[in-house]
Length: 158
Image (cartoon, rainbow, N blue to C red; front, side):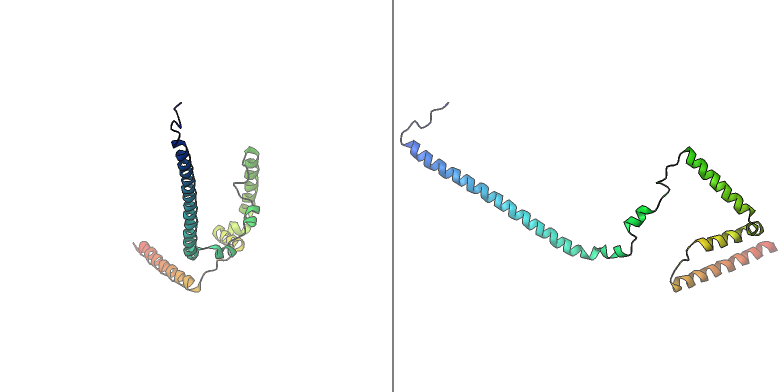
């Protein structure tokens, strides 16, 4: 190890100056820490101002019109049911029995498309649209029907 404090007079000067240096180092460290904390707090304030600007994009008001998560979780889905060999066979049997009942139905035997149409009207909820969009849709359908009718009569004449 090196010789320290070889000079008798230098020991007192070095100890005072070294304590000053240590104090200055500590103060500079504390200042750096204090400045870093201030910078972080200003960054948080900037983020908050950005969040205030984004209030226009806040869609939380629409949550009252959306269905509840609980009701969606209660509804069984096809994905939740595990399809294995037994469940598949049971499903096939049930659907085969349903198909036989449909085929034996007299209204289905008379006019299948009309029976299907009536079934869909009875089981599906009615669509609620604006009056304007319905009237436009009807006009388009009428134009298509007229064009189809003209083209079908022309095909027959040839």
